[in-house]
Length: 327
Image: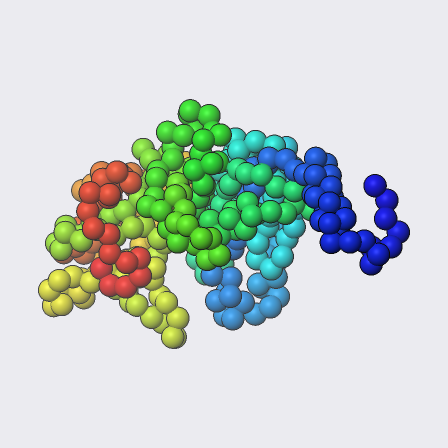
């Protein structure tokens, strides 16, 4: 049906033409894809602290790794803007595997970088209907996927129920359901899940302060500082600030006590202080030494404070307090 002068068409003819065009668009461009959004966490703060050049280098590290891994797993990058990358795949399993490999690659890179320069990325995956000409990808599913990614924490992979339904059984058992959440621009609460990409037998998710019975989630970055000092030169000194319930005992804890470092083999404690003793399951760790930390490990600090490390399931039985602040 060809029309050279749309102004001459009647209302009925225009509506018929509109319906015909809609049918053509759906027939030619409608398909179902797995969508993946990845986004750098706290990039605005990083730009403000270290400047535009350092911030842009951080973004490029993200995009370079994303491009390599997405192509290796049969996907393609649709768009990169600001801190985020938008990719698509034929299957949700491809998107999930690419997400896991991206997080593993970031973990390997981060271990060689200072704590302040860690690259933390959150990922969202959705499986849904879109319109695409194999260049652009559009539709409500794209907006939903972006919102799911934005709801995540650093180093986290979140997925919708639709994406979860497309995963293989071995991948599904690694997923943990979250309560439905309200996402900006989405009319209904959205049920989501977290894909636990780290081995729960090697990587604890939380720790308990035995002297107070409070349970804290482990911060998401790959190098985590523990110590008594909260700030140094108006900047955070430690990611976990340690404090004894009896203030008179706090001097037994060093200002910088130890670091926890994640790598492909597990979580390891590296002793920083030479003035306050750290014991891992009863064995003293000297300055510069390291010891593996697993669920069930107990760390004794200065003879006055005990941290018990917990798996994700163990931690879920307790009330978790906020990630930042004194413990």
